[in-house]
Image (cartoon, rainbow, N blue to C red):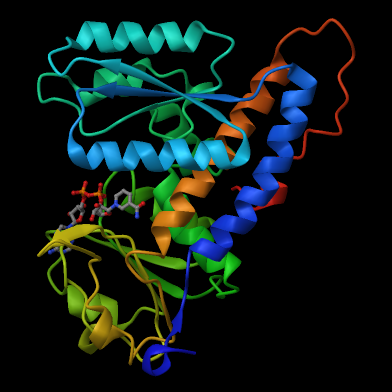
Amino acid sequence: MADGGARRLEGAPIADEIRTAVAEDVASFTTANGRPPVLAVVIVGRDAPSTVYLERILKGCAKVGIEAAFVELEGEATEAAVVDTIRTLNADPAVDGVIVQMPLPPTIRLSAVIDAIDPAKDIDGIHPLNAGLLRLGYDGFLPATAHAAVEILRRSGIEIAGRDAVVIGRSAVVGMPAAFLLVREDATVTVCHSRTRDLAGHVRRADIVVVAAGRPGLVTGAMLKPGAVVVDVGINLVDGKIVGDVDYDSAVSVASAITPVPGGVGPLTNALLLTHLIRAAERQAEARPRHAAPSSAANTTASSRGDR
Ligand code: NAD
């Protein structure tokens, strides 16, 4: 208990736990394959916020022994050049996962870039094949942020099955996958969005509220059912400070548990991306022909690490 009642669901200790498990798997992979797993990050033009994000990825990879390779194209690069770069990485057996730094310049169609990524290397689950696998309940790659929003509940021992959940936001990368994951965990889920008529009414009925709208202060304590669990996915820069979508100060005295921003979903997102990468690396290594019979000891499935 802290902050006048609500339990603060911190992402960092859970992220540390996950990274420790990933580091073991990375060490086994490196021994078995004679090289560390490799993540390629495609960057089309750099700006200050993306540099901060990229440094975080680099640090996260280094902590667990994953090699991160930045593939930088100029801001003026054509769509064809970006797609070609992704195809080259797809074909490279020494690259295990590919992510593309967003947002892309407006001249480049997001769909063309997403479609170009090999689903086997799509560790942030943005390719339609992985989105479809999630929708159908198969074990594909999940978008890391949506995964983190639900994993923080699971790992904090919050009961999900049978509870009423509201997800605010219906984006393909956060809101919708979070909603599907909650359904998979047996919650009863309502998805709210910018055209929802009575947002407060929906939120008031929810045991679990996941907010991913990109609107600071959208959810206040007065909207919450007493004892609700709140997961704040939002990241907004307000007066030079990072804040979420939830008015923390009013929510904290009504909720039973709440994720802080920063420090909640964010750290977990980065750690989970690493679990996706090692899983991609292991799967591709298994699929490749081998000279000698491999030991299966290293093939701890990601789901046994809570990666699902
Ligand atoms: P998005 O802009 O693609 O989608 C926002 C969604 O919110 C839309 O579906 C929209 O309908 C809904 N929405 C907007 N205003 C609303 C309102 N007033 N009432 C109800 N619904 C409303 O954004 P996104 O990419 O899904 O990201 C959502 C938030 O999550 C952003 O703040 C983003 O910065 C953050 N984010 C966090 C992480 C992380 O690791 N924590 C990662 C990615 C994105």
